[in-house]
Structure formats: structure tokens, C-alpha cells
Amino acid sequence: MSIFMVEKRKISKTIPIEGADRIEMAQVEGLSYQFVVGKDQFPVGSECIFFPIDSLMPKTLVDHLGIEKFLSGKDHNRVKTNKFLKQISQGYVASIDSVLNYLNSTCPIPGTEEPFSKDSIPEDLTILLGITKYEAPEIFMSNAILTKLDMAIYDIEAVSRYQNVVDTLMDEDVLITEKMEGMNMHLTLRHNGELKIGQRGYYITSKDVENVHSFEKIGKRDLLPIAQKLQDKKYPNSDVRIRAEFLGENSNGNYYSLKGNKCIVFEIDVNGRPLNASEVVSLAKEYDLDFAPIIFIGKLRDFLGNKTIQEMSEGKSALIDKLREGIVIRLLTERTLDGFGRVILKHRSEQYLAKTDF
Image (cartoon, rainbow, N blue to C red; front, side, top):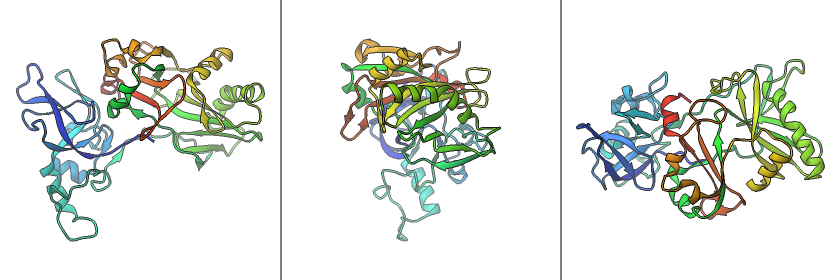
């Protein structure tokens, strides 16, 4: 599960914007996101409260901070990637004092009647401020029964929060694929023949066999034959799970303008463990899988050259003459890092985020 947190941070850097005398760019310690702030509003080293992109704020907080016109969504309460004077801004920062005033006007320190002070503000303010994360709405059909997963929801950590992890991977062999804009789906064929199909947070079972849920229909058409072959020829007596992106009609705005629906495979698990990326690439070739477009295989340092991951995430999609959503970076051979977990990272293109509403 990727980290989402509204937190107390320190300003690490300010960057002038050419032609601007009232605003500048800034960054906070430990993160590589850049965002717009008022000129000289946050000196380097000053403390602030950082709201990451996709923060959904309660109206009382939006009104208190006076930032409704800068936020997105029908309720003008979502922090979204935006452009100001051609500069990409990802996130919002508020002063410690403004958040203190808000907290002390709404609630005392939990379990006490004491007001908050600068020293008593917690590092993580997500719950205290009532912040939730925006998630693209899942699309359901009325004829489907939904049951919660018996596994963790699939998610990937963002590069901009873990530049320190990226630095350790520079001389590692990686697979870099295009991040697809669609809906996360998965098909699991258990060793006993039981079949489960789901989208991000749920398993799906159609009520009417004559009018099945689109995930079940496409999963059985595109993914089940693959799972059966893998189970028969490669991994007998094993549970095989195929993870894919569901694209096309009724899928998050159908970004790729497809007729009908299709699945793009991006990962295969066997008995709950992801296969090495090198093995999945070989299987994709052997079984002619509709696999996520491969951008690069090799040393991460060679991929980047003198550029950043943020810069290299930009580009056109392999499916359509439009911006790609971003990139996914994984090791060719699976590995975990202490304090981080499985080594897999994503970066969503700033240009893409600024131009879309996903």
C-alpha cells in the first residue's frame, strides 16, 4: 500500500520563477515534489504542513485556508497537479500557524482539553485534519456481487517520496514499463480450479450469467486461457494470479479511445509471490501476452543518462498519440529492502497529471 500522508515538514529549497515577482517554487525535505508558494513566504528551513496531491480537504479547512479557487474537483477540495506560469506544482503547503489556528478552533488535543501548540502538533496530521485520498471511482454493474479481497490492495510507492531508494538502484538491472491509465484488475486461478476475478478492492461475481460484469467477461476471455496454460505447463498445483490493467469503454474516461475492452498484463504471481520481471518478460514473449509496453531493460543509470526519473517519465504512449501516464520501475530479479519492502516504484508524468482529471 503506497504511503499517503499530510505531514509536518521543513522547506529544503526555493526556486525562482522567471518573470514572477509574487510566487516561487519550493520543495520539502525528503521529497522531490515541487510546488508553488508565495514569494518569501516559506524560507528554507522553515516548518510547514505539506498536503500531497490527491488530498481531499474538508470544506471547513478549505474555507479556513482560503484556497478554494486553487483546488480541483466538483467540490473544489482536491489538491491536484497544476501549472502556474508553465511551472508544474504538485502539492500544497500551509503555515504551521494557520493549521494551529484551525485545529484550535475545531478540537483540542485528543483525550485532553488542551489546545495544540507548535510543539504538540503531530508529524502525521492526515486523520486529525480529516484528509482523505482521492481515488478514481470504481465502475460497477448493478448485476455484480462484490466481496472484499483476502489480500492487500495492490499499490506502488511513488518515486518522488523515495528518491533515496532510487539512488540505491542506479547500477541495478531494471525493467521499465509504461504505466497504463485504466482500472486495476486481477484474475486468480487456484490450484483446485477455483476462479476469482476482481477489480482493485473487490472480487466480482456476476448475478446473471447472461449479462456478466465486464471484468468477468474480459477476464475469462483474455486472462483465463493464460492462467490455464501457465498452470498446466509451468506451475502445476499452484495458484496463478495475473494482474492487468482494464482498458477501453467505461474505464476511467477511456483515455486510449478504444472500442470495446482489453487487458494489458503487467504482473504474474505464483502462490502469492510475484515472478521476477525477467521471467514475466520471457513468458510474455512465449505466450504472446498483451503486456505493458516495455520502455527499457538494463541498468537504471543507462536509462537516465544525465536526466531525472521525473524527466524520463514524460513521453508519448505506445498505444496512442497522447501523453503516457508515467512509468513503472522494477528490478529484473525480485528483492526487498529493509524499511521499504518490495522494490518497485512508479512515477506519474507531471505533464500528464496537469492535463487530465484522473
